[in-house]
Image (spheres, rainbow, N blue to C red):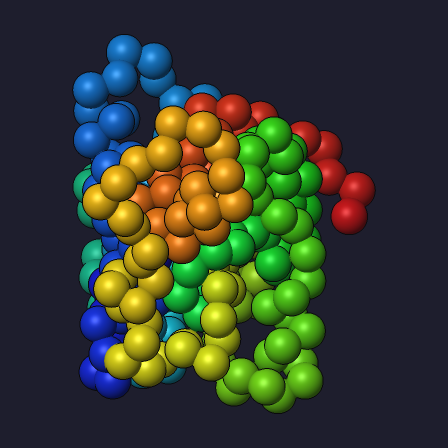
Length: 231
């Protein structure tokens, strides 16, 4: 997830929700007695809204740290014993999960993926509430939204993984309506029995959105298994 946002609004879903979920995941990793299935890097990317500069720099670190790649132009000592964290992200053994938004609110789903992403998809296939599709790719290819994300950088490098995306209402994307208040329908009174009102409240309640996002991140961290990919 990226720590910056457009200055046109609160940027609640793009991408404060992703940052909040990652911080909660970090807290879970610290407190949990169950280790994740593999080493985890939590990447809080900067300058995403100005040309994906943060992920570009991360990949430069990664390239500089890989002895099999040309390190010409790197600005740090690659022989230092303290290997930088980016070098631990290897194409043949790691998968990314980027958190993004094309519009505040539900639904939330995997809308685009990189090559060899079977492990990522498999870890999330049983996460209740997620949907899987190609909506993000379709929208951007049609030119309806001229935007991109850090996931594109990783996909261009041939890295495995996927993008977890909110796309509740693309017309609110990068506007002042990307906020918690405009996506909340929380009532003071709670109903004990299921009703259409409760269903709609769940779909518009940001707390539920963060819970689903947190569930997805937790499944990705603890249920991921390396799979021999054929895609």
